[in-house]
Amino acid sequence: MTLPTPRPRIGSVRWRSVPRREQSVAVQITHFGHACVLVDTGAARLLIDPGTFSSGFERLGGLDAILVTHQHADHLDEDRLAPLLAANPEARLIVDVGTVTTLHDYTHEVVAPGESFTVAGASIDVVGGDHAVIHPDIPIVPNNGYLIDGTVLHPGDSFTEPPGELDVLLLPTGAPWLKLADAVDYLRAVAPRTAVPIHEAVLARPAMHYGLFEALGPAGTTLQVLEREAATKV
Image 1: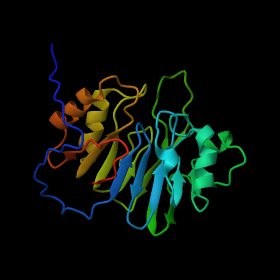
Image 2: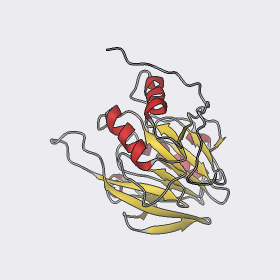
Image 3: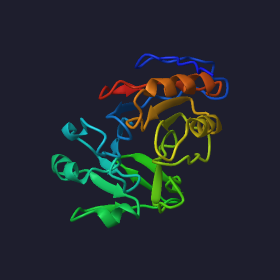
């Protein structure tokens, strides 16, 4: 059986009617590859998961916080963390309980699921708890999802669902712990206004996954593939 392989252009969208929620004020999101994104709410500049498979975030300034979902290197590159913090001396480093064991001599804050905090006027809820299972023989590590202003969710390496309707889901696309059917089911369960694919660096041709997300996603959801390192209103 040959699967269809629709190929949405970078930045292209497929608009569907959105009868159950009004369009919200857009946030600005920049994708630096894989799991790393900059979320600019207008009040706060939040960099999430600057890891080894991502690039370009090293040049950022004016950050209010660096958020880490979990300890795996593709979500936190410690070799580039020191210069990033030096270039952003006011930025808070906020991590999960597992990442603490890998940090060396960095001032940081630890948050856990069920907690909430604010950064420069942005409200952030910590959701989730565990990394998705890779294999029964591999220990499960802690994983924080970050829900920003109740509108944007970065789930880390998990299929954590938000407590209510969601504007923007940063959607994991490819990983050792993920198969496409599970990602589609997650997209359908959350049914966000907009889905932005991330965590794609392990895929040779992520466009095939993007096309299937678009074809199989829920009515009312727009798939938006971000151009790398280009700030985009979502």
